[in-house]
Image 1: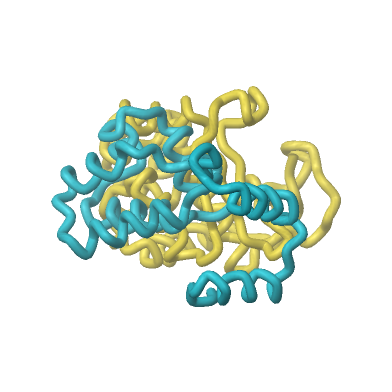
Image 2: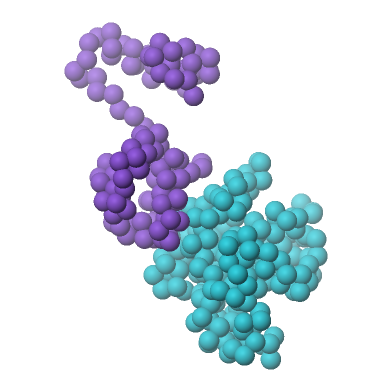
Length: 120
Length: 176
């Protein structure tokens, strides 16, 4: 695994502020292996980290947006609430989950197009 | 375990240490801070990654390791206890363990790569053609600027440059 976008964001932030991973771990009140695992994409970024990081480094509005996007893109798992949805939505989500690992690039692009999203 | 590589003398290694300092943005005299090097790895050696892992993820007698992937991009893994000692106490031995792995990457990238796939037991090879000796020597030369430490004793070297007792002892011995 390589750095996620979040890991890269934090790496650059630390270089700018002449800090090391241990400083970030202390700030976030976590052990260094946990932080390292998050930055390497093995674990999700905990929700409360955004506010702590934004406040500590006095991020401006653009930097906050960049951090938000970095956290979003670095997710290792996503959850969909199936409790309050229609049957057709539930079936779509479950079908997507079952076939996700077998999706090829062409199929993924078609799905993105249906959803009205830009292709990667 | 060790591997044979192209030979390099201590003087060669000393010259290379200056190049390595320059690559990381240090001049030939200032003190190196290993933990700061880690976040710079990706800029100096593109494709390189590193992580701190829980102690039980590495063998008991291994403080840190450097492993290539199929494309010869390297990943350094450092034990939590080693990182924490370097961070909390500026522990010389821990600093050395970290820089040692970075030295492996530098040496590989500039051509001192294993030239025989056979593994050797430690101390089986002549030192100047040993991957492990070269990394250890480079670590010492990189961390302890030669000209700056001519009149220093080992304790002063250890304190000023944050290196292990063995590295500072070696430097003091060689200068005298």
